[in-house]
Length: 277
Ligand SMILES: NC(=O)c1ccc[n+]([C@@H]2O[C@H](COP(=O)([O-])OP(=O)(O)OC[C@H]3O[C@@H](n4cnc5c(N)ncnc54)[C@H](OP(=O)(O)O)[C@@H]3O)[C@@H](O)[C@H]2O)c1
Image (cartoon, rainbow, N blue to C red):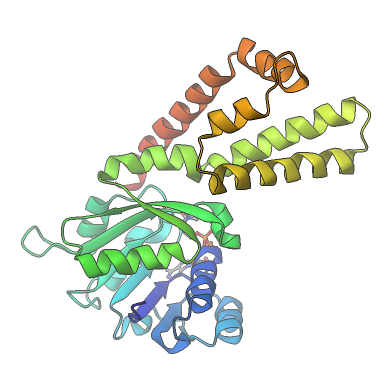
């Protein structure tokens, strides 16, 4: 496993999770630095992981081969403009910010067409905080094979990392997995309410719903066969599952999911447009 020197700019929830994941994978704490304006946040990271922390972003960058931009999208432009003069020309920039394009990052980091920056844009999701995330990653043409491996290793520390051939697919990733945990929470809420109406105590219904989601997700992730086949195997003709699935389908479940995911993808593209200005 490669052990590049990594700087995290912004050391909030996602950065803390990535740092924990990297250290859990055997990356040396000495190779990781982080900067954040919050003194408490810095103290927590230093105490938990033994990494060097700074209030000044430029100091965190010293010697960094990989720079992870982990600030909120709204402050990204100011942060990039501040970092531009301090970044090593051959450093890999990894952005995990939602809605910030490679073109915006290039412009804000002062890159030119003659000297483009190596940028990997990622879309992780919230379960990354438990190292159970899934991320879509896009690398621009300036990213080398080794840098691609380093970015894959970074996001792989908090879950599954999947490469995309086109940056525009980040909107689809946002719509499927970025926003996706909330869709499953909604289903769990609805199942809990339905169970409660059938007489189950609320807590019992909630546990039945969430543990069923967990078990089903593990079966889907760990099985060789597609979810449609897993579903077929648990749906006996004329049985209880079939009664429920038929009801879902009669209500247009698949079309509704398509419309919901389309709406999220459109909103992702709109937000990216606004944030890039
Ligand atoms: N959390 C998720 O599930 C998730 C999923 C996908 C993508 N993302 C992306 O990940 C990024 C970070 O999200 P997060 O949830 O980790 O947010 P977060 O917990 O708010 O972390 C951002 C950190 O950046 C710090 N910060 C603010 N201004 C800064 C500056 N000028 N220089 C350096 N650090 C600065 C913040 O400090 P203050 O709090 O003091 O402002 C905060 O500690 C976002 O761009 C988000 O779009 C997050």
